[in-house]
Image 1 (spheres, rainbow over the protein chains, first blue to last red):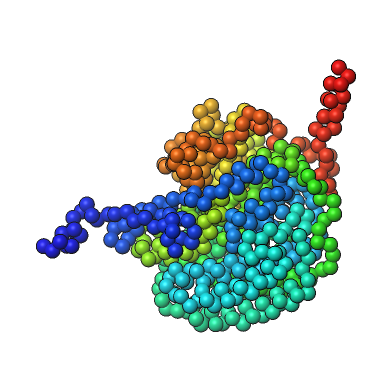
Image 2 (tube, rainbow over the protein chains, first blue to last red; image 1 turned 135 degrees about the vertical axis):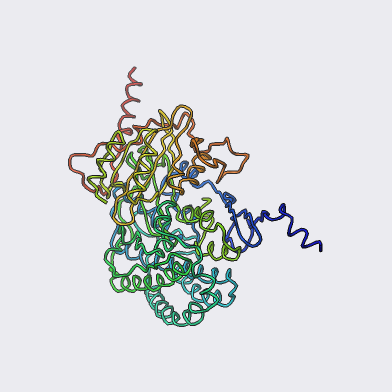
Length: 375
Length: 184
């Protein structure tokens, strides 16, 4: 008997442990997964977290509430403005601060641009994971326009700290409006190309269909939200379910799937691009004049004793800030509920018994941003 | 989801059910639980189709408080449930009911040292193995507050949106205290 056959047939070699990450390219950040494999099948999975823990919640307990804003951008670096939004809303709700109408419009436009940017990066990177190299070039080409637009108004390209309690730091100008309108037109004209190039591709279909199926009940058990949940057919989006800011004024749809597999969440995200464009267009049309900051926001913002929650729809699902205040200007406790945290926790159940290559498909469909999990 | 029926069921399980103004707090209901009813409560919530938003702890006196947040996919109903841990910082696990609680409970064990009884794998998640006894979010004695100090004060007769934060009683009380010290 040849040596290799002897090794393969020895039962003690049937199962082995493969360490994936924390530097593996398909884990998008410092995530480590221990895979117990039998042949090419993953029988047990154990995600190992905490490599990027930066003690954000501990930091929050040591400084005035208002100065935590830059930290929010560093949790989910792809949805920084939406994280800004949730935190600004939390403090405004807690302190009873009204926000000028123009601010709400600016917040919605920039947040939706941020969401498109995040989805485009996921689109390119996910397909790269699946072995398609070209789409990421197209996606980054489009994404670059958003970064330029947002850089002009916020001053940074990734970790924005643009929203303030009661307003935004800088007004948008005509240049912003024209370039955003041009971008909306451009991206919309590119959708048919994306569909031709990628979405109908037979390899993609085979890699995503019936892989990583979820049900609404599984989502409830794990607290999964965002496109993964919508892929199972539940039209649950914080912008509609608990309309914050001025989202209730806009006409947009919530794309849903039916099967809850990777293909469903893939298409949900793809269709969300168009819905975000619709919101941006409507907001640009209705953009009112006015101040960009509430007058009389106290420099030392004291939050009345009690607990407060603020939930917004981040690109990956529901983001919640939960603040416990003792009446001072420093939070007594701040908890950030990040969507990827709950979404990733389903992996040991979802990927059990999968082919290793399907594990990559399924984990890519979660659209993970590890720094928001580790915080 | 029949909210009136549900409220009755909550009342049977809990010591207090309180309706909250969503526009002020971001929650619809606050539920205070005894430790031994936490699992029954979680099972009821899952049966009614709620998902687990978050699970965390707050360090207050008399004991660490574990906070559970639930929401519903179909209608807006944000429920916050609280329970105190016992003298050994123990709390029954709900990770067999809501599997998503598994990681939240491990994280709470890291940060506050709450031991979730019968948890399948209560191993450090966010912190490194060697920091297992660090419990970084426990307050030191100087900063530890009583549970009543972090509760919402009873609402004023006519709750109006306030454009400005009302100054607390404390700053007023301080000069008086200083004065009386000077006088004495």
